Image 1: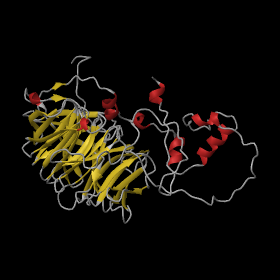
Image 2 (image 1 turned 180 degrees about the horizontal axis):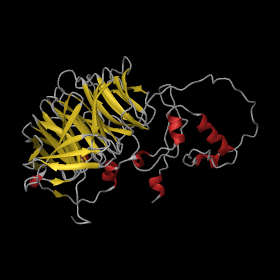
Image 3 (image 1 turned 180 degrees about the vertical axis):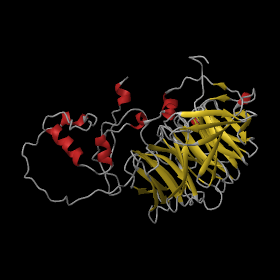
Image 4 (image 1 turned 90 degrees about the horizontal axis):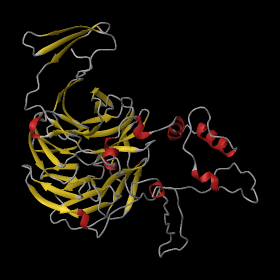
Amino acid sequence: MLQDGSYLEYRGHSASRVSDVRFSNDDAVLFTIGGRDRCLIQWRHGVATDEETAETIGIDPDVEDREDVKDGSSAYERTELMHAANESKRLKYFQYLEDLAAGGTGNIGDGELPVQRWTGRLVAPSAIPATDLRMPESNLELDWVYGYRSHDCRSNVKYAADTRLVLFHVAKIAVCYNKEKHLQSFMKEHTDEIVSMAVHPTGRFCATGQVGKRPPILIWTTNGDTGMKVISRLQGLHTTAVVAMAFTRHGDGKYLATAGMDTDHTIGIYDWRNGALLAHAKGGDKKILDLDYSPDGSTLVQVGVDHIQFWHRKGRNLSMRRGIIGKKGRVQPLSCIGWAGPFAVVGTQDGHLYRFEGHMLRGSLKAHDRTVTTIHTCIDGLVSGGRDGCVKIWSPGLECRHEFDLNKICVPSSVRSICWDPFGNTLLIGFRSTQIFEISSVNGTDLHGGALLEGHAPQGELWGLGKSSWTISCPCVLLVVVVACSFFQQL
């Protein structure tokens, strides 16, 4: 045994020592026993063959890649005061503001909030009005949201059951946008930023997951006209953030799989209607980028940074097999999952589509010039979008039927989300520039003469807001946003 030799680490026993280790006579099984946990564990043993040994890719990640693979609590930094404000425990937050107003540092013994850049611009009124503790007579109502969360989320712009309705999220708000009426409805019950979304196979329900100490998952109805009612709340398993989710495709979409951003990247399986956690397991030590169920619901596929894993559930137990890349591919970040019949199709950082049979990679084809960021599967095949700004429609046999270069209709940007309606022959596409377009799936024509929705580009932070006083023909005031971004401050 070499002191500095390479090794593989597997977790099973508690922190107490492993008392004994024995191989079976044919070396097919390894048995281990734990001292204090009094547990016997059986490990399936195999030696990697040439077919199973894969080369690791060497791509230098840029800003967008780093956003996707950012992991752990540092990805969503929150002080205790920020958690308190998000959870409506605002007393400490107000104490913080009062301390700042009195010339203090804002340190009230439980962490500090970021510097409030606007405090240096405050000017005391010349005539201080009398203190009035009554409730304000006016109120605010959420009217419109610009853009969607695109810089670190993917596959989060979707059709509802009624394809006139578009679902997406930004900040703490889930949005249902009616294209025909040009109206937005909102689900506002999250307490922190939403970072994952999954739509039920019927399109009538949507699940959204957020950031937080114990982030909740909310499942709500997607009919914006009658209200986006929360019908189920799942909480307690995950910490830091819920980064990926998937409903089962078969039957009535009874089960919901979820992935967290805790140290072990925990996987959970819920009977979401009853709020019951059926099974959970450690997903590994690397970030999960996507989850999806096989069409028959028998297999849950997990992909992420340098890994792919296949899960099967029996009762409350989850068993896992690692995907074998072999000589047909390379170990690299795997970003999204689709299906060609019963076979998993996975998008890679170097622009390939990997087709798996069982847990073995059996085919690879070059699909995009850069990372394949999103895949959507429907009855007619699958569609992929990439960082090259292109969208490709594939048959179930992975023959390319159509290719559309979307850099011709919008500001050049990565495709971050795509959804295909084969009955209406439309594609709903979300870009990293926060624009959402709808095009024809037959010839790639822009169906609306421009973006359905757009917002601020994802670089930097928004610091300034101004308004124009001129009015337009309708009885409202046009607001113009003036932006000062930290991105431009660095130029």
